[in-house]
Image (cartoon, rainbow, N blue to C red; front, side):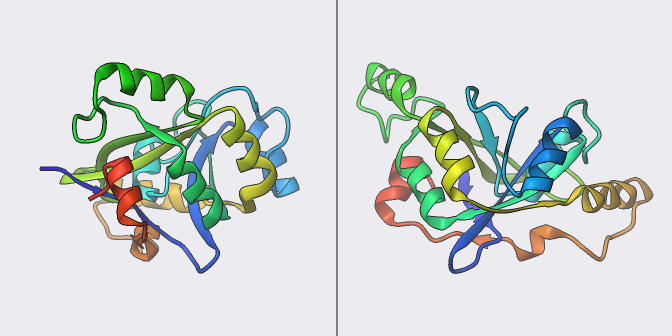
Length: 196
């Protein structure tokens, strides 16, 4: 049995998610405190509350078009709106009555939830634990950009520092995962997105 966990750094009002972009997208967003062109509102954008999973996805900010890692603080209200309007990326018998129902939800929902193996700061898989990824499209992207985002910060130096420690076999002093705790959601929402 996999443990599906929403772990994040959050306050009373906001939750921190991560994305990685090429400098041409990241720099204007940092300068303006919100996403602006050439960020595209017309494609799905994936947000990740797990810093370590973001490190795995972008290779500690080393992969092409993912050289700048951003920490985005968004409203908890917006985050939970996204979860309420999400479809699971895979068919799940405990949630869906049929493949047809799942496909219908997937084709119409503005948000997609996907569960992937969680990682530690060295990018090793944490057995039995899954981290959430949330794909925003259509209405959800517009809300994310125009209403939910409260602050954007560049955490690329932390990513590179973790990479240096991983290569050297030493333990870093700063690890964002330490501030990530289980995010509280209602039982109804847990069942909807298969959080456990």
